[in-house]
Each structure stands twice: as structure tokens, then as C-alpha cells.
Amino acid sequence: HKDLTVYTPAPNHEIEEALDHPVSPVRLFTLVGGLTGCAAGFAMTFWMSNNWPLLVGGKPIATVPPYVVLGFELMILLGALSTVAGMIIMSVVNARKRVPYSEKFSDDQIGVFVPCRAEQAAAVESLLKRAGSVEVTHAS
Image: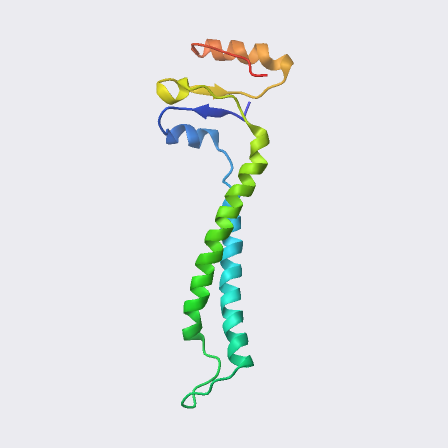
């Protein structure tokens, strides 16, 4: 069984590394939002300066350095908003995958959730008992 969920009262990084869960896809929402915001900031400033040219002292109409500020600000804004949207979307998507939880796991015990078919339940239960588990319960 490789699809395990472990509950501990305190973070345990060794267990996290041993479980080898995939990274959260929320970071992709942040990347797309940040790149979109940066591109939108530069595109908007170039479009405005070319649509309504303001010649000052013979300087070029479209120069990059002043536009970096707006590109950066929109990158941060859209990156943050897309991160929040990604967290909400992924929490709704993952809400269907709820696993059983007990308050004992927040106090002083460690819990292991092993998803398996009904015919494998007896083998998993005996494996957990041999490993020294105090209690084995079946989730429906």
C-alpha cells in the first residue's frame, strides 16, 4: 500500500518524506497568475503609451524601466489572487476525498489511514496489529 495518510500531533518531516506525496498543484495557479499579471502590466503600459503618446524632452515614447513597477505590482496582485482561487478550487475538488479523522490524533496518538478494498481489509488489519498498533478501526 502506497496511498497512506498519517496523522500526528506534531509535524514529522521524516514521515512526510517517507510517504512521498505529490506537491500541491496550487503553485501552478500562482505561476500562471504571476506571469499573466506581469505580461498584462507591461502590455497595458505599452498600449497606453502608444495610444496616447506624451513626448517629454525628446525621450522615447515606450521605455521599459518605468513600466517594470506596474508589471511587478500586477504580477504580485494576480499571483496572490490566483493563489487564493487555486486554494479554493483545490479544496472543493479534494473535499470529495475526505478521510476519517479522530481527535485523538491531535492529542497524543498517531493515526494511519490505509485505503483498501474490502477483501484486503483483513490483511491490512493483521499487518497493522503485527506492527504494534493499539487500535484498528474500519472506515466505511
